[in-house]
Image (cartoon, rainbow, N blue to C red; front, side):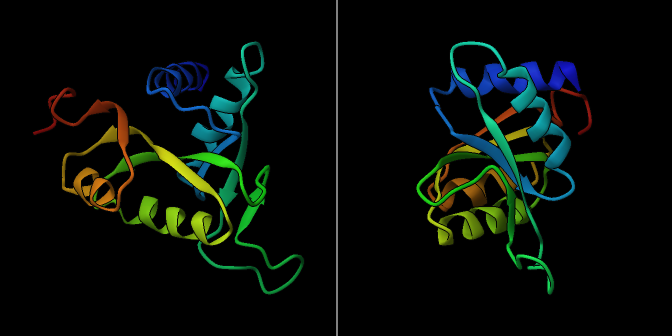
Length: 138
C-alpha cells in the first residue's frame, strides 16, 4: 500500500490535479484512496480521503459519501481496476450531485476494456498507473 500511495500521489501531481480529497466507490477504491491520503502527509499539500457508498444507508446519516468531503470540494475519483468504467461513472455522478468538482479519475490498472473511453466521453480525464497490456495480460 505504501508504494501504491506514493505512485498514486505522484500521478495526481503529474496530471496537474490539486484535489482536496480522493475517493471512489467502496470497497475497491478505499485502500488506494487512503494510501494516497497517507502519502500526502508532508508538503506541499495534504489530500484527504472519502468513500462513496453504493447505496445510502437506511440508518445513521443516510449519506452516500462518507469521510472528508464537502460540497464545493475538488476531488479525484479513485479506481483499483477500470473495466467498463461503471464504478467510476457512478462515483462521479454521486459526487457531482453533492456539489463536488471531479478533476479526473486515477486507476491503478486500466484493463483496456473500454472503460477509459466511457469515462473520458463523460468529460473526465483518466490516468492509470499501469495497463493490462503493460502487464502482458492481453
